[in-house]
Each structure stands twice: as structure tokens, then as C-alpha cells.
Length: 438
Image (cartoon, rainbow, N blue to C red; front, side):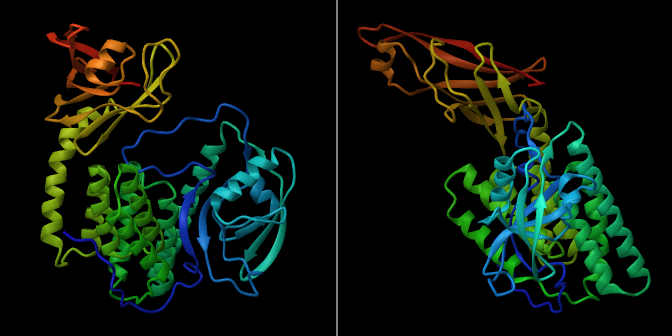
């Protein structure tokens, strides 16, 4: 099944809703990982806080934009948070801070961090096609800040959905369409979390009913994101490259969530990146929006295959995540599709007999069913004889097992004669054990 380049032929605009090129998402540096990837570390020290959800944007420079062509769009502003107190609003595009250009959401977050808690940050922004100046004074991120942020997102989702229902009941179909898209964009900011599945699908059902009756111009930026994602995918050499393509498809979905082909493309790249759970959700949404489409039979067959893979992966997912060992080093267990890997997060510490660096792969292999798999353990020995005989980096046969709520990696260790490198014995040894709660 091929990726679609989106031959758009629909018309009429949601101009107020979709007027800029959205290229990244950052809820004050709480990024959206692909489904199934482990969470990042939590902040341990006081950090400046504004209370906004951001997306990087690009647009054509003009006199009205003061020559600026990029910035950070405010998707959501938490009530009573520092940004709201400063007067910032949804859809403001911040283009400069203290006179310096802020070309994306990361630059805005970095400016807040550099300014510090309780100090003023002079912002230049675009609002309703005009340049304005606003002073933001960052506060301190509190324990309840994230809860308040997501409560606001939930409130905005409910408001836009109700407004869409009201407009639809009054026969104002184009207006209803716009409200439903806006609700989906807020849901998108929650990373399409599993618990939001019914909400997303429920709104897509409403959009599916309106699509034949409302002709909406698909923004050019959605096509651009889609084309960029396909190019990224074609050039992909690593798992991280596939993740970049995945995020680019999601940018396109933010712009135009009513397009079945975008969900299809996102589903296919999620599968290629090794996230079948996310792939299945996206493919189901493609069917929901276009149940009688020509690709329907192939998509349904693909979903059936994903169902089997998801069932096989389910026991293994309990062991994915980051683990801290007794020597304070950290390792991360990842599962992409059927490929299981253990990656060094911190690298070896002095005196622990290891030579791995941060990012080195310690183990890799393929699961075969719900409790076993085979692969390799990569040794980086410190023993001079072992290095001379087998190399500074060498692979050993490994078996992965799930038994009694523990994931064990059994490595075939070699006993050998140092002077001749002759292997005298091979012994299976439990090299690592990971509990179900990292």
C-alpha cells in the first residue's frame, strides 16, 4: 500500500482557522513522542512557566508581519497562568523576544528559560494581522501546572464540540465543520492519547457526515507537510528518521484532520516506525472518514495483521522504559514492531568493567511470540585477551524470556584460553533482568 501525495480538489476556506504553516508542537517542551515510546525525565528544579501550548509556524513575510516569516503560535493559553495574565491569547504568533527573533516554539521556550522566573520578557507578536507588543513575566512551574493546563484543554475541546453541535443543528454546516476541526486540534495537543480515542473518533464521525456537504479548501501547508514526511520516509536510514517522518505526518493531520489519506499515511509510517498500536488507530480513522473508499479492503487486511502483532507485543510492552541499575547507570528497553533493543542511556561509569557509551546498543533481537525471542548481546570488554581474541566490540548469542513477571536476557558466555583464543566452553548466563515496573 503506497503513501499518498494528496491530490486535493476540495474548495472554500477555513481561513481564520488554518492560515499558517505549522511545523512542530511543543507544550512548553513537553513534546509528543510516538505511541509506545518511553516517557522523558521529569524536571527536578524550579523552572520558568508561562502556561501555553505552542506550535512552530511559517508564513509569508510582509509589511504587516514586519518582515517576520516564522514564530511560535499559541494553540492554548491556560487561564490565570502567567501568559494569560500578560494578555496573550490563542492564535497569537510570537515572533520576537526582547528584540530578538523567535523563529519556532523551541526558541520561545528557550527565551522563557533564559529570562527566568519573575523577570520581564518583551514579546513581539502577530494578532489578527497586526503587530503588537506584550510583556510576559514567567512564573514558576508548580505541581498542579500540568493538571491546570490539561483541564483547560479539556474545557476547550468541550466548548468547540458544543459549538459545532449547535451550528450543525442550525444548519450552519461550514461553521460547524470549523468548530469540530478546532476541537480535534485541541485533542491533537493531547497526543491522541488512548483515553481520548472515543472523543477523537466521535468528532471524526461528525466531520465524516459533513464532508459531502461542506467544501473546504485543504491548506497548502497540509500538502507540504505530507510531501515532506514522504521524503523523510524515503530517505530514512534509522529509527529516528522514521520518527521524524511520523511527526511530519502528524503536523499535516493537525492542519487537515478531515482528510482520510493523511490518516492512511500516518498509519503506514507508524507501522514502519514500529508502533502498530498507533498505526491501527490511524488506519481505523481513515476507514471512518471514507468507509467505502477503494483502499478499504487493503486497509482492513492491514488492520487484521496489526491486531495479531499487537497481541504478540502486549506482554513485552510492560518491560519497556528506562531502568536504573545498582551502579547508577541507566538502560532503556525499547520495542519497535517485533524488534527488541536495550540501549545504554548514561554509558558506563568508571570502574564498573563496562565500556559502553550513551546511545550504544547493548542488546537487540526479535520477539517470537508472547514470551520468547532471540538476538545478540553486544559486549565491549575491558579484558585485553578478550579484546585481542574477539574484538573491542563483539556480539554474543542471546535469548529473551518473560518468566514470572521478569524479562531476562540470557547470553551465551564464552570460556576461552587467552594465549590461543580457543573457546573451551559456552555457558548461558542471565546477563540482565528487568522487572515489569521500571
